[in-house]
Amino acid sequence: MTSPGSPAARAAGPRRDRHGRGVRGPLAWPSVPAMVSRRQRFDDLVLDSAARLEGRLGTRIHEVEFAVEDVPTTEPAPWERDGVPLGRVIPGHGRQPSRIVIYRRPVEARAQDQRELTAIVADVVVEQVAALFGMQPGDLDPRYGDGETD
Image 1 (tube, rainbow, N blue to C red):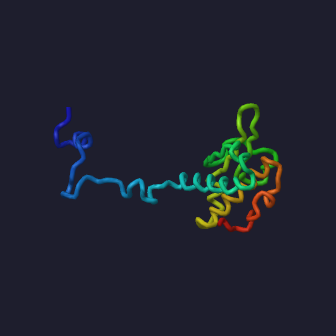
Image 2: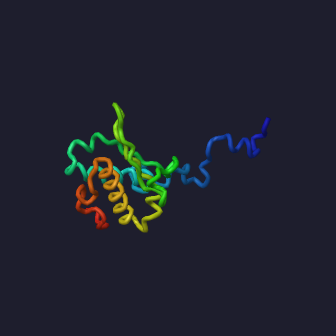
Image 3: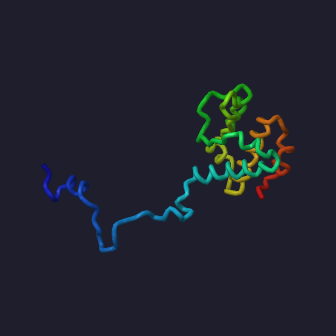
């Protein structure tokens, strides 16, 4: 049994309003951009980059699932042995759709700032979509490789 003043009793009890300023809450509310995680911002960049390609590919882009993983989890393919892959195409078969996976940490490691990150993500998405559909990245997106995102 614990006494009312013991540390165990204090930890189990209700939170105190120490100096009359109210109980501590979150530093920012969910609608504030500070509450958006880096992972969520990266996911949004990937989806925005894919949406940009809809004008060139039409509904074919809707047949592709996009995914984001932190790092590559499997052994690299023979053609990926030169370095860490930034993305990977997983062709669909049967009823399973094709999937493009973008690796967040390797992409973020190559970017110096948010603008460069946006450009790199756009280029990686274009490269992977072009590889999936048998196209050249420059034919798919004329802005490929120029570092511009708008």
